Amino acid sequence: MSPRCWINGVEQLDITVADRGLQYGDGLFETLAVFDGQCPRFQDHYQRLRAGCDRLGIPLPDETLLLQEVAQAAKGQDKAVIKLILTSGVGGRGYTRPVNPQVTRIVMLHAWPDYPLAYWQNGIAMMLCQTRLGCNPALAGIKHLNRLEQVLARNEWQGNDYAEGLMCDTDGNVIEGTMSNVYLVRDNTLYTPTTDHSGVAGVMRHWILDNAPKLNIDIVETAISVEDIKQADEVILSNSLIGLWPVKAFETCEFQPGPVYWALLKHLLKDYPVVDV
Amino acid sequence: MSPRCWINGVEQLDITVADRGLQYGDGLFETLAVFDGQCPRFQDHYQRLRAGCDRLGIPLPDETLLLQEVAQAAKGQDKAVIKLILTSGVGGRGYTRPVNPQVTRIVMLHAWPDYPLAYWQNGIAMMLCQTRLGCNPALAGIKHLNRLEQVLARNEWQGNDYAEGLMCDTDGNVIEGTMSNVYLVRDNTLYTPTTDHSGVAGVMRHWILDNAPKLNIDIVETAISVEDIKQADEVILSNSLIGLWPVKAFETCEFQPGPVYWALLKHLLKDYPVVDV
Figure 1 (cartoon, chains in turn orange, green):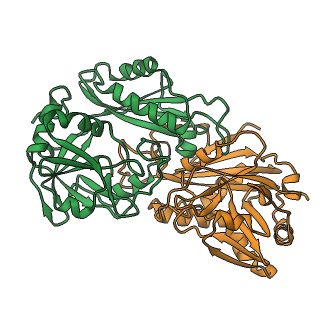
Figure 2: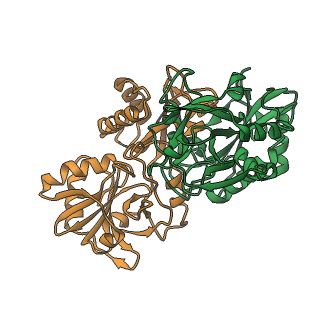
Figure 3: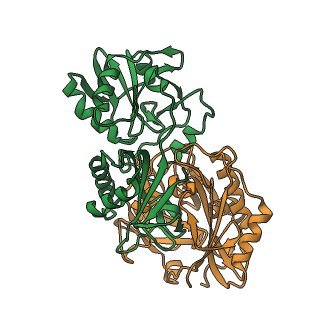
């Protein structure tokens, strides 16, 4: 499927070069799963957009309007991906925003990614990226358009030997995968890096923080080292399209999809059918 | 003057939303001064693009081709600005670049900025921005498209009370202005922050590093604190459009345009007429 795109509600594939999304990465994005013509986690994505707009100081578009534009793109799609971008709109040269920025809304419809079933059943191989994440509380946690660090990290490998790369911050703390959040399990407790100085606070991460306790799994946000990952009972990744993946190989270590992974995945799949395992 | 724009040599104002410049800020830019139909520092900007393309791992367009496209935009312009953007081109969803990225070349022609003559004669007022710059050697020095930190800093003030804002990194070291490099003078020596962990290595900064010694002014790249700025004999800013500005006010401190500023400015203006002072 060729991607389709709506800009401010009008279907078109082009955008003005003067948009500040292109000029400065002055904006935010969300990646939403479409199942059976619906976006089941729209509210969660909208809440993260709210936090992002607050942080960047750009106006948040009306929820009903955005939902309508997303629904229009999702209509008739059995399984698909919507990438929703908000930018601070069209501006002149220079970093100063217009006095009343008119946010640009971009809704892109993409094909569902074709990951092998084995990724969920047996796990994925994860590499350790050399590219580090900078630390800046002003930008941490939100899903903004300044993604060069992820681009550089993701382009450290080609081919299918690895399905994801693990990124550390400039201090050497584990933060996230290039496109996913990361968790380790020790003694039936989940640990995941904090996102207050670096990284993205994923919508699926939010779901896990909410739902792990309901399954009697404790979850702790904390500092995590590469060594901690290596010594884990289980290593798990999450994002809105994969749901959850277990890691089967990292550096010289091997892992199995474990009970915490399976409990979370089965709970997720009740109303979020990323995969049929 | 309304901006004009050429994309890959063709005059047009629109670009595909699938361009990775918009999707991820995966690219670089340069801001060039046009005087009398010419871009006198094209080579210096091209050298920085070369360094940026190397760092980001994207192909560097041919120099003759770029020069030709810049010259086409500059033709007939008495005094103008060219913003030249290179992106990693059109791609699919996800951080992985196409195997053979086709770089997008964007040449935008803008009006010359209308700064008051007094900025060069008496100096400018500079505020201290709260927004910090993250540190990441992988991205430091080059002029990439991930500019949210500068956008947030520049939007800390409105109006003309300040002409520039000073930015520190997350450790509190002075790095640069939102759109300029910064220098202090003590005992006839220039000091400017290093750009190896944060900040942009400006083309005008490069000129100053080259030319200060020719004027018997020592110049040192080093760590600089806000307190160092306050205790300076002179404080100077530079970029490709302002050339040089002296700072007259910062926090509670006042400065005068001093002998180092005037020597550099007069030397610059011999073949780079940003202003008629």
